[in-house]
Image (cartoon, rainbow, N blue to C red; front, side):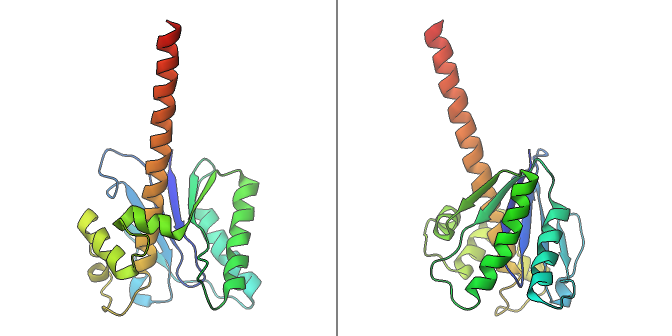
Length: 198
């Protein structure tokens, strides 16, 4: 089973796909993201950064991003998303329309979808539901040993696509952790029931 964490946005969406291959969680992850920063247009076994397709209206823009996600995921993937932030400002309706289109297509494909509140992801990653992007980046480097900022040659002030990649990683890991914990709990309960019957 593959777990797919998606940090979905208009400007810099990121996908983290975990497929167990015997390495650490991070080693078995691949990242896909869209960005307008040319120096971040990379392709390797680990990272696949591409430019946005041209669009002439919001509807085409939303579809381009959704179609990109659908081209990366597989039918049996478990999809993990971050819910809306209640403190969001700006183009909140555009953000909702963009995410709504993706959710509709995931539903038609029958991909299982799990949605986490943003504070849950932050707390899972750092221990604090109020952690900012800088703190999450520090925890990511500490956990994985990977400095994406240095890898993509970005300045200290450039947050995207770094924060999006990191968010998608922790969303993916949270979903994997929860899914396996529930699975193991179910197995333990089933074993106890069998022992009682025996």
